[in-house]
Length: 133
View 1 (cartoon, rainbow, N blue to C red):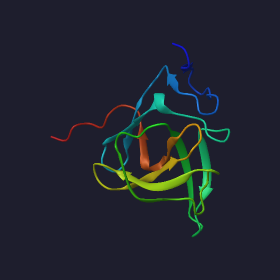
View 2 (view 1 turned 90 degrees about the horizontal axis):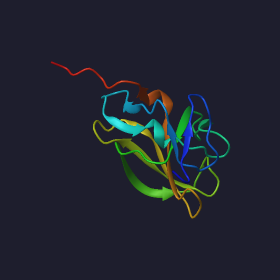
View 3 (view 1 turned 30 degrees about the horizontal axis):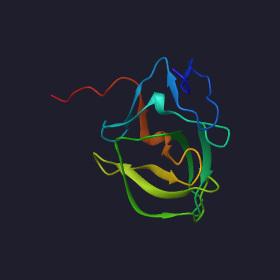
View 4 (view 1 turned 45 degrees about the vertical axis):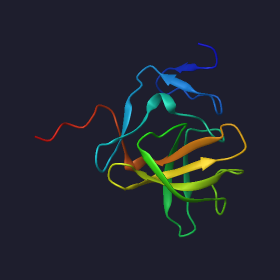
């Protein structure tokens, strides 16, 4: 498949390239268990998939970059104020299921035109959550 990189566990992709992981796990909201994204949508931005950043209040986040987040709802106007990714404006992204803040949606006149920076400790990786009976 041209333009798609298949990665081994632990292998990083070239910047902005769409990837598929052999283990391709689903990624869930840690708060409610709702599906947020897929491992195959991991992307590299500014040289890495994960970035440790801080906001103007000094709160530190580790964000993981994904090209799509189907379980995220975005709100607010896009802002370039205190952006962590030069040239990208951001909007807050919350879990579509429970409303927990998951991270930010980034958009620009660049490649990729849209990606999500999701707060790693607000996500759960691996098999789906057990059904509550």
